[in-house]
Length: 255
Image 1 (tube, rainbow, N blue to C red):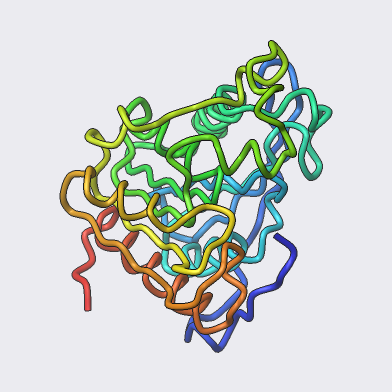
Image 2: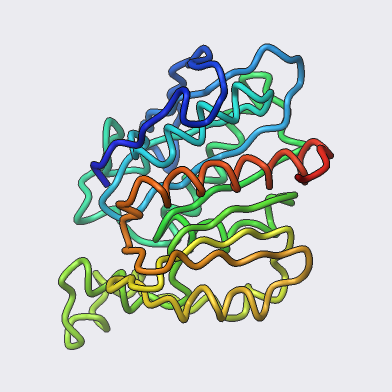
């Protein structure tokens, strides 16, 4: 996603906070990450997973990272293999298992850098949401925020231009997924989705919300698209996501 979100006074928070580049490896690929560090010692940390064709420079993720850091929550955003500044050829390295491995490697990299991941939150947009659903239990995530996350791989394959005849080929087989069996184990979950999303149908959000454990909340943007293009939707996203992470990673009362 290339749209830029308005930041600064829109959120009533002084920005920016220090950002530290952090490279790490996943299956031998060198990945580029950026750690937004608050001044507080041993902060809670959120790790972000971007959408299929996006990168760590996604406007939504940058804005959320900045406000989290300004409110004493560290945020680590990175380019998945084959995207942004990370190594790998997108067409040959992009699949759900690979991106899940990137997320696990990101946690390991943070721990090696001295960042505590005991209070871990996850953020995922579109395919990044599928990644978060896949790894949340294994990583013992305490809170999670998703935007336009698919439960099944159909929308992802269509975005890649993969035809039905090609889905069963060895090259595209890793792109197939159905995360229905993961949903019952998900909890402390905040979901965003545009009800006019033509890429990932909003029924995915309703399904995730119906199956997830409490606490959970689903926000459907009336007339909202897949890219969350409208500034009013972006502002509410940042405000609500920050409040969710503050509440369930730091124990800050809501409201």
